[in-house]
Image 1 (cartoon, helix red, strand yellow):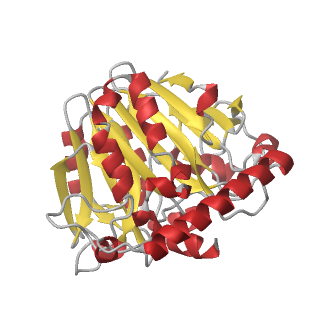
Image 2: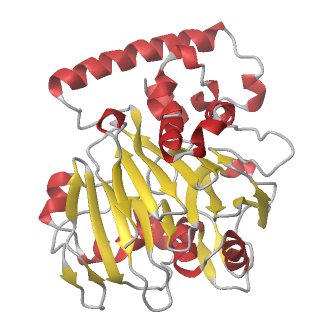
Length: 375
């Protein structure tokens, strides 16, 4: 199983990784106002900020937010579905609301503190963590119906010119913080594109990974990618973990099979219930079952994927047997503190028209989604 982890770790992105203690409600010394962090469900918390710093964190702040991730996303009509995939552990998920204030739009989004567990969250976060929490979102929606989410991809596939910045004379915006900045300041997908063109978008401080984004409003969906230090934008409704704004398939098409599942079943996502079910089709643990043949998530190149042989099939069979053994262990003993297995940490379905969010954590689809609204 260690082999599969080494392959998966190349499709990774930033996730908040900071320690815990302190007060989790009130007003901080610099004026950030927030409600008490409350437990919405097992492994799911929520918090609302009335005020927080609008200053974009420096790129170096993303060094404190490192982690590993793979994702899937799709938009159909009024609904945007998004899976956030990560290592199976005890880290809870946060639904983070911000109210309209100081010219910013009201938002709702989802973030995560990877060095936490429910006990440390309920013991309280540090002031520094509370200040960063609004900027930690991976996906979200604002009151105007703009939805934003980010997925990772291989930096090596993003052109021959290393990504150092898209507009050196403009204010810097590290691509990890695009979701928060865009949702706060933009009412439409076109405004979001214009906003990032007016900034110098710098990459994640990683030799391996970078991000691409989907911006969706009631009329349009764009996938935004950074190729050869240029912002490349096309109308697209699907995004996993490889470039989609290029004519040719990139060298590392991770998530190729997941994207095809979304395409094949796209019509299902035309309702909120349907989108919720569609995202279950691409839950990450489906990767561990040989019959799905999700070869690209093994880290194979596009050339290798054209000639998949018996060896890869045999490996998938071994992987499935090991995963089924792990499920038995978890059922009898609970989750291990250290694990090499992945899961869809959260599934989010955004209802653009009604400002509604459904969230399910840790693939607990039989419990149904937890429902939230922008306040």
